[in-house]
Image 1: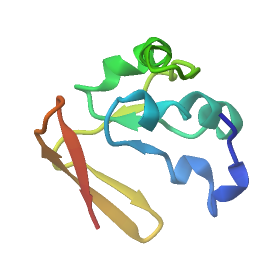
Image 2: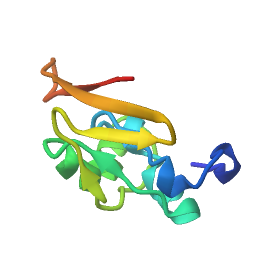
Image 3: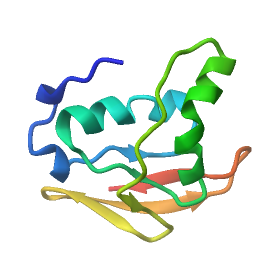
Length: 105
């Protein structure tokens, strides 16, 4: 999966990807992004275990993806993540699969 570090307007460590959940189609680019930019990987602790299972989940659907590096930080309800002057607040929402995360500006 190609990674375009120039897409970051500030340091990647200041704009880490936030994985809203652990499905392979949402976190399949984590390894490439981490390798290319050393960005932090963020995800909810209930989905963190899925990062080690991306390759097998993807192959079950006919996709070739690499397992993700371990998360640098886990996020729980009420945590915040800031990018410059923008701050996101994490709100948990239980859904059809484990959980979904909602970010409020």
